[in-house]
Each structure stands twice: as C-alpha cells, then as structure tokens.
Image (cartoon, rainbow, N blue to C red):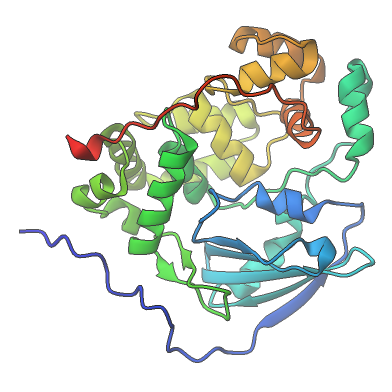
Length: 328
C-alpha cells in the first residue's frame, strides 16, 4: 500500500552549512521596476519559491528559488540608489541563475515600438509607469505546471496546491533564506507525485492528470517550445498536450518567455477588467481582443499597464467560493 506520509524534509531548521554565495551586479540599460517585474512570477502570498523582505526601493530583499537546468538555485536581489541590482546566489544552479538575472528583470523586453497613444488611458498609464517590463524565467516546465494548476479554479485553490506540492516534493532551497523555501520538483518528480498527494493538496483530478501527462513528454515539450519561432508556434506545442488549452498556453508563454503579446483568453476576470479599463464597461473575450487589437504585439503589455494603473473594476457581490472536492 502506498504511504500517505509527507516527505520528511520539512524541519524548521536546515542543518546544512551555508556556503559563500556567488555574487554579481546587474546594471539595467533602461529604468526598470524590478519589484513589479520579478513579483509577476510569484504564486500567491505564501509561495515557497518566493519571499520579499520589503521593497527593493526601501532596502528590502527579494528571494527566489528555482530549479535551473544546472540544479537548484536560491537568488537574493538587492538594489542600490543608482538602480543597480546586486545579486547573490547559492546552490548548484547559482551560475545559471545569475546569468539569467537580466532576463528575469526584463532585459529582453523591448517596448520601443509600443505606441501607447492609440488610447488616452493607456498613454497615461505608460507615462506613469515607463519602467514596466515583462520578465521571463526561461523555465518552461515550471511555468507550464503552475499554469495547469490554475486552470478553472480560484487563485486561492491553485496557490494552495502549488505550495503543498512544491513543499512536499520539491527540494529545500540552499542559502540563508528568511524561512524554509523550496524549489519545484524536476520533471520526473512532477510525474511521480502520487494521486493521494494531489487530492490532499486540493487540486482537481483533471489538472493533476494533465500535469502528470505533460511530465511524460516534458523534455520534448521544453525543447520544442524553446525552438519555436513565435507565440503561435509555442501555442501549437503546448496545446498538443491533452488538457492544455489557449489560456494555459498563454500563461506559460508569459511566465517562461516574457511574451509581450500573449493574452489569456478564457480567464474568469480578464476580459471584464480590460473592458472596464478601456471603455468603462465589461466585455467578453471577443470584445477584449477587439479592444486590444490596435496594440498587437504588445497586448500583454497593455494588460500589465491596466493592472499597474489600478484601472480595475470595483468588486461586486461575494467572492467566488472555492469548491473543496476533498470532502467527497
């Protein structure tokens, strides 16, 4: 009979000695809001892969744990008054994480051909947030797994499931993290999470089956997505997986590749928010795509500006109550 014990690496203290970190400085060529850019990769308030001890602007530190192609890495970011980002990294993936740091902070995001003047509100938000950038992790399967978890459920449910599975089956983060943090499982680890654990974590069976199925093809999916020429080609790669649709593909493209044009069609709230921000009225997915069409190539950038500008529809009525299938 399969054991239902959670892996025993959740001690409050990590007895391993802390080695000296690798360090590097990144000087962005353009002004960038690193707090906002990196926080876009966070999976809820209690994400075991992310922590922030205040804002970088006020002397805080951002902590991010990832499973890189070279191994697990913990990355700690600080900022100077001049805008330089100072990074320290621990673990076998430290060098990879430091090399990837500019991309995480939006260095590959180029808004130079973005014409915000096509809508007066967008122009104003762009004027107020010229440092908005879309970062990327370059970690395809982690982005895909987290997006699958968020399909057709509340954020609360998805973030809770992510926290549980990563903590139970991930790897303890190296370095002096502010509290115990964890890297996600590797692809084989995702594949072998037992069915009882998905259930205990509160994830719906369709999502857990899709993650396991994706992990069976994980290596080939990663290679094909990286080799794809554009967003449409990446969509074809991801949607070839049973259980993955346009919403999940777009979310994966945004997180892993920093796609400035990806739009998460089918999102419970997004079309309403875009419609309200740009017209003062709700709309549906077709209406949202029509409103965003003048910004083709930068539609995700407009969405980020809407949220940065707090141009959101006021909440009405009760929040959606998450359904808990574990009680059945």
